[in-house]
Length: 580
Image 1 (cartoon, rainbow, N blue to C red):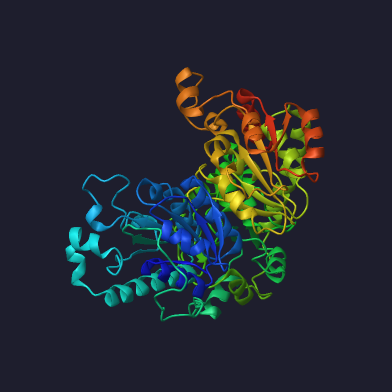
Image 2 (image 1 turned 90 degrees about the vertical axis):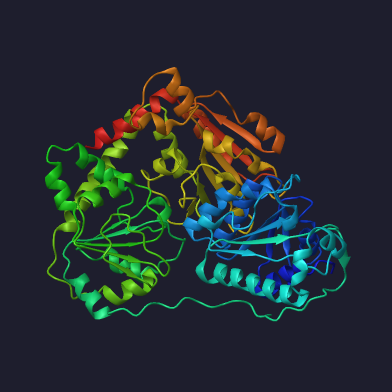
């Protein structure tokens, strides 16, 4: 093994190895050479080279999301690190343990006019679990330090080493325990390429960090009483890891006649009695003449939420206007007051919560679930009827695409229109669904899917819109693309979601600055990056394309489906009118 001859670089590598952080995503540069040398020359680590820093950070985040363990992303100094910020924000709000490591210039090189120098310390502080700003080693490049940074010599190298070890240990502990992104900033002075066969430092902590957060002490008797005495209970599930909820819990919720379970595509929860399309329930109420009566009938007495952020704007608006008497959020780490009526944060996992409180000793059965199940059955029948009436469009395309995803696939959804259309159709229970819902941005969705695919036992398919795809096209610029990676690109020539939002108008300004209409195709990108490219512009071509899309191949594939830009929004809005 070979190490950098700089102590702080050695220290970081030794800590990562002792804690079991083995996946390292590196954006090439010069200032981070001590880290690159140390990680790539140690067989314990699996290193990936991603040139575009924004793509690199989302790639690492997707891997951490899939593995449910910390993954590091490393860059050079200057503007490079700022390109990590979108992924850092997503990781922060999605509770993903992304470890950001930035190489920095010495403090005496900052703000004097040198290139690639910015104020890197604490630059991510608003969206980071912890910022570890390491001190520069004074045992390295002593001549430069003596000449330009004499004040650094006020500390001994032993003190600097001890400080750096504490900071690294704290950052890693938080990444493991709090499942949050952390930032480690390390200043390096030239020369940067010196090497050593053995480390010159020995770290004090050599044990993998495995501390687990403990559940809070709850009055389970009281919570069970609240559950049993609530004849109208709504369980609303946000982003959830696949297979996180036990079958026993799903069964108990499904069989409770007083409980509605509202899930989303990103919830990864499936049961015939659950309500998988929230907007298909609420939109008809919004259009109803007796909307007040129906919303009051849907209003729960007890709301229980768990999982990450909610996609549906309609359920948010409903619960903010028709608030429950009590709102319990179940999560080890945090509770967002999304509906402005949070009563209590239950600091445990959902499996434990429902096993404790759900019992057969509830109040007499209400008609709460039966009434809304009837509504659910009606909209599902009407959805099928509507699909037979409408022409080729985003709506019919999503129906066909979702029905044709092979069982067991890992599915990544881009944001904006893609994730919202996906809520309208049922997914097979074997599919594992992921989406960047922390900040809900279109940036980095392809990179996240590629990173997540690396360790996936199953093939990965990304469903994406045109703006999301072209915005993150550098995601295809890497050497790690699996031949079974698939991208379904719904190209409706612009930001179609803006055509259904308030303010839509048929003007050149709207098309240019909101909808962002275009005539781009993925053909040239597919050729450049070695993807097979299949196109479809009508139902027949889509059926033919899907027939070959998932077949085994030596190269990844893109299925690009062109849909009518102006017609799509009318058909989507018409769906809610039809089922009403």
